[in-house]
Image 1 (spheres, rainbow over the protein chains, first blue to last red):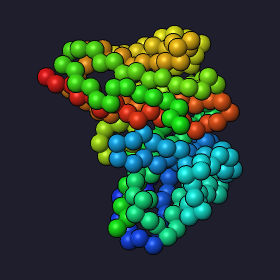
Image 2: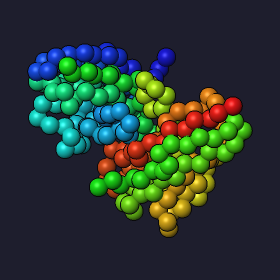
Image 3: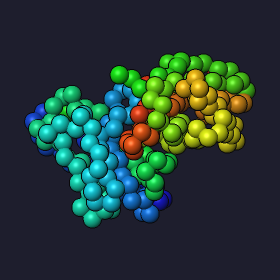
Length: 113
Length: 112
């Protein structure tokens, strides 16, 4: 399977804990995106990488959120001091062109208790 | 400000019928319009996409119709099947940003 993969698929944590998610994009894609999706809503953009450079960040990405893509391959999204409002599906997507098809992974479902 | 408005919120269609989902956008600089299909607990899957230089694009049973002057685009699913029951999202990007702006989704139910 050469699609986008995400790990873990599910995460339950207590409020105040830190969590980290990983995304492995399609191998030939140099662009990587993170989105957040809450129940009954469409995905909302968080951040975008071209290779290892983080080029766009949403206002949704508060100081508690940080994303990295150190070698231009996989990416990590860390949430510090989690809050109940952080409970959502965190989706990763990748593409080979900026204004082109974005392919999504299965997502990481986060529940903050 | 919601930049992509999607309707209806939910849709029930009989097997073999045509499902039609509509989207309207506000930002005239948008120049790429994809549709995604999402099943419960899964990530969105790209169905079909269109750019403003064409008014229609067809792939199998799925067709996008695009009206640039009205700033509207729609998804038609021909010969709808129970397996098409899912949530469908329209999206758009452009205007110097690579982020996709999504509609709120349409939950489609195809009944036998």
